[in-house]
Image 1 (cartoon, rainbow, N blue to C red):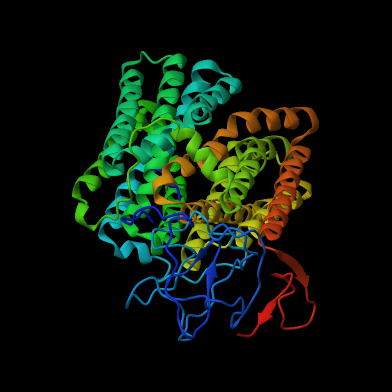
Image 2 (image 1 turned 120 degrees about the vertical axis):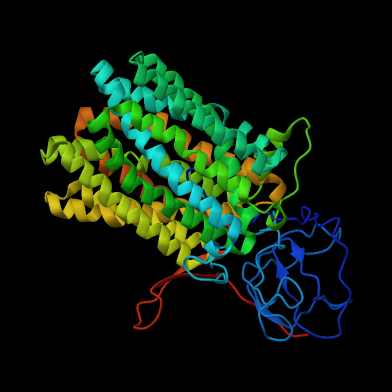
Length: 541
């Protein structure tokens, strides 16, 4: 299993037209979330005045024809008792931007952030099912990294062509670009644990098939292409299923922590897998590395069998029907808190994550260090990625301002690294670049999951992965050409510039949607840059 970014047993939230008006209360604060009135608080009948101080955004009311605008809140406010509102009696958990199902489809952009989740850096590991899942994943992730490195070496040894290595990579990612959305429909329609049995078993078969051909001495380059394409097809279903299954294991409160630990798991395997593959290939040949990869999937399959199904939080399954793909796209297009993080991750994936091209060129052409230096660069980025994943797990929140800020810093550091003449400065910059890149990925993934109706989550995550991963067959050749034509420094600087500018544009769009403005305060002890409401509404009942 590879990482990716709760699922819930409650039904999908109703629309504003279907939600009955709450009973009137004699006193108390009136609290609103975007597009819906929270049960348990009330508007005073017959008056338009509220005892509240909050920022608002106006718009036509959908629930009462012919009336004026109603307040739309983009922050959480205290309940009538002054304590944080909870999502159920005696739960003690802070309220989220939607029902306990992990987010309302009508929730507005969370520029200001969310309440800190429960727990600690490794809180998801207290859950038995997730602990099993993570244990199996660390074994299969190590095998996956072994196979990736060995596959590239095998193609290069068979053909002597770097272009053939690029074709292998494209064959593996092309199915996600072509069919990624259909994988989300399948993930929403069938039980996720059952689907994972099939996808993980199919990946095991692909590894064993390539091992048999290599060990028998009959492997040809088209066999590798075919296996890479087959693995990509399986990933189309496996990726959204595995990522949304995380929320079914841990519930909505731990989604961000679990997504972060998944990424730490994958990046830790990135430190081990290539090293083991290099030793194994040098000692006994590449076929044994492919065999180890195929057998490594026995670990997640065993862990799936050992899970307690009664402790899962299964979401509602979507029945078979026409137009479900269009329904998913329409769902995302009407929600700025979903569409803009997906747009941003698309730009970052296509223009900012071309490090195999850049790092190999820096190691060979700029610093003349060869394959050993290339391995060092990859290790430093992996270390930064692990640190970023663990810090994301500790934060426990999915703030869109963290996403935007990390993306801007990610692009800016790429530009700095591109122009530095020093080897050691360049190498040290790779650690924070890896950390920020992982922060962008985890924050976007978890915020999209938490803001999505569970019945639509598979389709939304498949769109997320299609945009993020599917940009590789486009961005790779583009920046390979830029590197050959104008040099790796220009190529990397352009990638960083596009990443930073796209993050700034998305941040401004989200701030506009939330009716916020950027405030600059240079006084000591004050936040120097922050988003504040454009206006406050103060009325007294």
